[in-house]
Image (cartoon, rainbow, N blue to C red; front, side, top):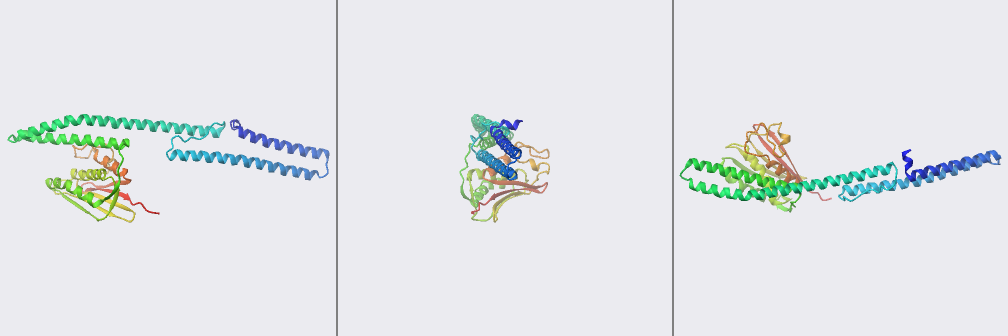
Length: 345
C-alpha cells in the first residue's frame, strides 16, 4: 500500500496493532485462567486500549495539522510575493508527493515569470533601439520637408505634396512614440510618480492643447466639471491617457461635431466621461477596441494604427482606474473612466 510508505503512518499502524494484540492477549489470558473479575479485567483492558489509541491518533493528527498549517503558510508567502517560499517535502508518502508537486509548480511559475520578464525587457530594449535609430532619419526628413515647403511656396502642387509628407512624418513619429510608451509600461520600467493633482487644472491644460485643432476642424470642444476634485496621479501620464481619448473623439467626428469632457465626484468614486457625437462603434467591435492594432472592418479610418486606446487603457489601469466604452453607431461614443476614492476605516 502506497500510504504505508510514509514512516509516520507506518508507526501509527504499528502502535494501534500493538495495542490490539496486547488487549487481545490480556483478554484471552483472563478468560483462559478464569480469573475472578474476568469481565472487569476485559473491560479495563478495552478502556485502556481505547484511551491509548485515542492518544496516539490525537498526537498524530495534531502533528498533521501543524504540517498542513506550515504548508498553507508557505503557499501564502509565495502568493504574497516570496518566490523562494517552499513546503518541506523531505518525507515519503502521498502527502509529501503532493507537497513536492506544489514546489515543482512554484519553480515552474518562477521560471515562466523570469522568462516573461526577460521577454518584456528584450521587447522594451528592441523597441527603444528601433525608436532611437528612427529619430535621426525622421529629424532629417522633417528638415528636408521643411526646406521643400519653403521652396515650394510658389508651386501649389509641390507644396501640397510637401504638406502631405509632413502629415505622414508626424504619423510615423507618433507611432514610434506610442510603441515606445507601451513597451515601457509593459516592461514595468516606468514608475508612476503619483501626487495629488487638481483635476480641473489638468482639464484646462488639455482644453488649451486641443483648442486650435477644434477651431481648424470646426468642431465644438466642451469641458465641464466640478472644481476642487483632487486625484492621486502622475500628471504627465494621466494627461497622455485623456489626450488619447480626446484625439480619438476628434478622429471620429466630422465638421460641426461636438466633443465633450465631463467630470464629477460621487460618494465613492470620481468619474470622467469623454463623449462625442461622431460615427460611433459597431457592436461587433466594442469588445475589441482596447486591443492593440485592432482594426474594424466597419471603420472608415485608414490612418489609425490602433495604439491610442490600448495606451490610454494601460495608463488608466496603472492608476488603479477602470475604463469602458458605450456607443450607439451613427450617434456617438462615450468613454467612462472611474477612479475609486480610498476610504479611511
